[in-house]
Image (cartoon, rainbow, N blue to C red):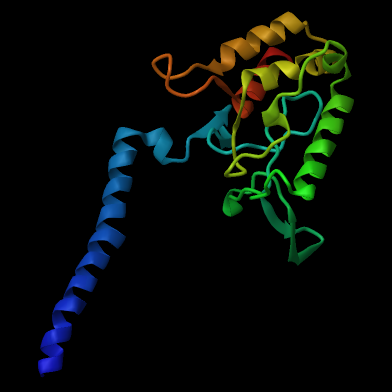
Length: 207
């Protein structure tokens, strides 16, 4: 009986905190967020013609040369050929991860070197114009899900997209400038461009 009296408060506290922090608080915050910020609470979904095409918070693996490309992603997932194994799966929201490779990592150096070579091959006009390759086009983010790139990274790709879509470079530069999100209050954060939103606007400009 004495043992039960000693254990009872601990069990009571454990169950009470489990209900409060594990059930009541999450449900309350979810309900409040749906009232105050319904779009964000639903995952900041981006819709085209009423259909969800992605989230403004998670990048997508754009590879076609007629689109702007985002940052490389280090996330992995099941290998389609053998589900028991894992392999590269860019922007896998179920496996957010960074490479954790340091500057002395040969694998990192080899990967960045390959990315630089690929960018030069895909964007010969930008290389010929002497444009430097922005760092965020060859390095992964801490989450592997970064949906944004710098305005410089978008501008580096303008010449390629102008060629692929037969558009003027000025119209694409204006589009990038219009889609660039400025620092909050002029100083909080850095300018960035959401790649999915930019590509949707690009398709609207020229299908």
